[in-house]
Image (tube, rainbow, N blue to C red; front, top):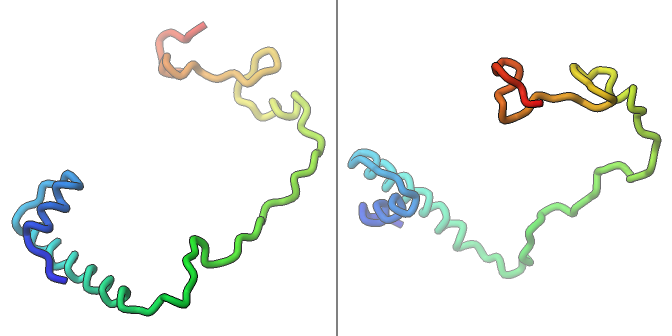
Length: 105
């Protein structure tokens, strides 16, 4: 399928792209080639193939969700760079972090 410059301009406007004449010519040829490949695929008889969204069967690869003991507070905070009163302490997001002149209370 051969595209025209007008077709390429229409697609470019939908994508909000500004194209030079050289880009337009290159894209016209490339898109025409791509559409030619799609035309070949479109000729295949797919009547016997059921529509599907997944080619392979879905298999759950996650472990079974079983309750188990969690970390204690001390274990969870053991590698925390900063902690206060048994909680993780982080810099306030909107104040600019550790290099800011003032930190939020």
